Image (cartoon, rainbow, N blue to C red; front, side):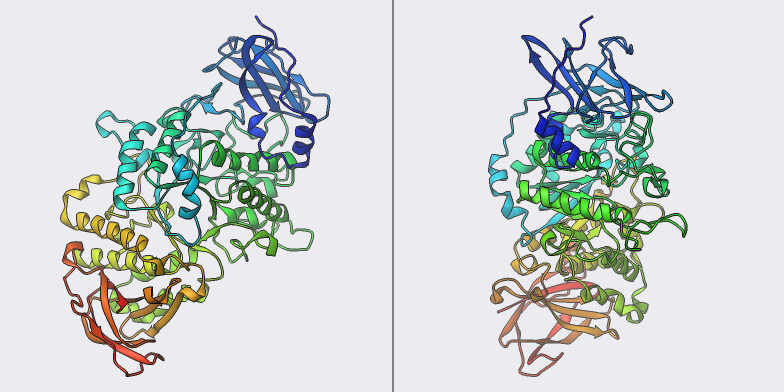
Length: 635
């Protein structure tokens, strides 16, 4: 059997960068790489295992026998083991068998840098490369405009395994099949972006992908890596951006994964107060270790570079930032200043975002961060963490709490629907109605709405209308656009059969119309994070449960007026204050017959009066349909 040949892809500069935590393209060096050495085809392997005294590559090419192909340790104290194995090629299965200096512990690990993994529950890595030819050049050249912070951003959050299943065959749809059906659907619905729940390889279906073992490999559940590239490519060819969920916060303890990798706490923090997540029974990365920081930032860069992702939504940032997250007194240790903040994480996130935006200025990073930690989406050079956007969890919580109340009681909770504007411009907020809101007994979004069937759908149209006219970008989890009744089931499929029924057809038609209106209305997206883009008309009419405001873009002539009637009462001659004279026209109405509404609308232009109202110099009397969002333009 061919022996391991000494070879290296690392330069001295690579090693210095790796040790310093400044090498952000480690995927070009670590892992398995098909090469030709001295005229012989084979595969170069490299793995970081500083506590090992012996590392063997075991696989289907040596009958999984340890010792047949032992890697060589580098002489530079980097802890890297490497070597070239002749005649091992694409498709070969392998793992690393590691004998540790610590009590001779033996581990068998999948390759942290593997580009492809076996289909779970199998756990081996696969030697892989592809020569996929991208066809999204036009998108990549212009995507800066589509991903800009002053562009329309309506995101469809998707779990690929349960969006639509091949029920008759009891299987997932493949990346190829999704490239047809999902792309066509998203394009027809006029979403601007898709966000995929984690597609990196993960062993346990009920984790939804948030417990990752193959950080550099798209999950094999739906096909090969190049087939996932095809899905991304197809989205781009249809002018749809793609955001990937990315999980640098924790990883599972599976025996083949990163945990206790070389018989030591290599990737996880050795102190359980910083290295173990009690809620998720998982391990936490050691952000204080330079090589781990390089691994994580390289992974983020990998998906942006190799898979043309347009952004990363970073999961569970709050759990990373705070040392006392989900911990009782005595279960955590303050930082050197006596505070709760994990200072290593703060510096890691700043470095992550600095590197991403330096290398890819036309993408966005989005933080799922649920606390009041300051300046999450502000630039690093002024003290921020450097994210492009942050999920507005407070808005989500208050809004859903408000809308589940019977409208007769809403006047006593008016502040819940207006409070978000008190802090709406402190961050670059994305308004999320995500998968987390439709699981674990919380009910679906439609299921939360009060009243009879007509009122439930009217409430949901009103909620979506309020969401799209509220400052910030938008995100909706799959199924919400047509009124999924049941909670999300990751093992099943969305209830597409509901579209046989007219109320669900109408809601889907409404959400498409909202997306279209949003994309065509600059006042709704040109200043989404700027107080200059919003002006209250009335936030204090709690007695009628009505709110009204003006959304502003770059051109004052394109400003729009939004009025939300949050009760089922029809209100005629309702007076709203306005800053200028002239006329207003109704341009959008959630109560149209076409959307399943009662058909009440303002069909004619409305003359603005010289009568002051709501602190404005002028006013107009409008008709407010029941449970509706209506929008006017100045004429």
